[in-house]
Length: 370
Ligand SMILES: Cc1ncc(COP(=O)(O)O)c(C=O)c1O
Image (cartoon, rainbow, N blue to C red; front, side):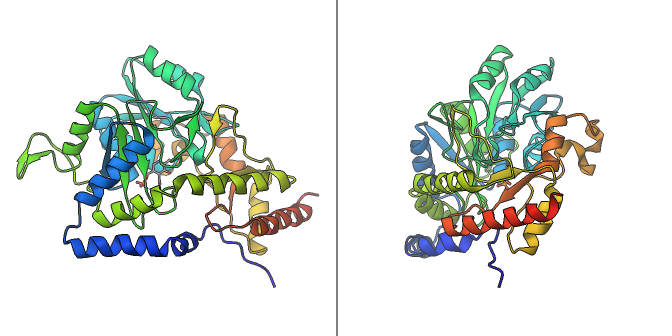
């Protein structure tokens, strides 16, 4: 019989935390207050304090977090915002929601994050912001990107959706730029049981602006100082996030130990690189092989779940054809899209499971490499 190793199994984590999560949810149910209330405030304080920053502002999801951060920084129609094409489409969606134009640049192939020289080459007189993405849990090169943003006077907004707790030279991601934007989509390293997001910042004016923007620009009940949106974080999600935040470091360490086990046992595929300055938190464990599609098919037949993050880069998506890129525009991004595959990585995955995945990869490669 084939042992199935799914790509992800969120239930395992929630079973482990059942008592704590159950108590948190019951507390909110009996409170009579369900959106933007004391639980959200408590989570915001704890999330800010985890990062050693003054403010965290809870919002409805990670896409809104990026959009609102850009809007709070004054980015809007006519402005250009540099980001990567090798990301979840949400990053680009969020930029366009502000009315600004996304400018997509290539990645450093080893880390799959924004290539600082490519970003510098894309700066124009209209460029107003830089949105690096700490993809898969590996920080972008913040030494170079902070310096680039300073030299060109750009707002630096970090997309930390996949990197809660990741560090660059010991410093937590989200604390390098003016603002760090987070998603708490259930699969994230810090995930709610529904949607959620937050922005962190040390800047009082930005925090105040974010609080207005997430709530229709409302200053006092039914008085609106500017046009905002509805992007509330709800109380149940905030209460769940408070519980899970207490376990974030432990969970990230578990992911790192699993990644280490993969790294030591996998053969025949390129394993992910964590550069020296990085504390990688392995939101995804992304390996690489030139016969990726055949390997994925063979793994599927052996009961191993693998996915591709992401098979079509944003600049080659039909929806973004009018941005003017073509095949060949971003070679490292396009090559990655052809060769990467994400292997099972979740809390509750065991070293024994990894050994089964490793065996399945070995057997699959024997079948496809002639
Ligand atoms: C890199 C990245 N940015 C932004 C987002 C958007 O987050 P959300 O799905 O919470 O809107 C995600 C998550 O899907 C993501 O992975």
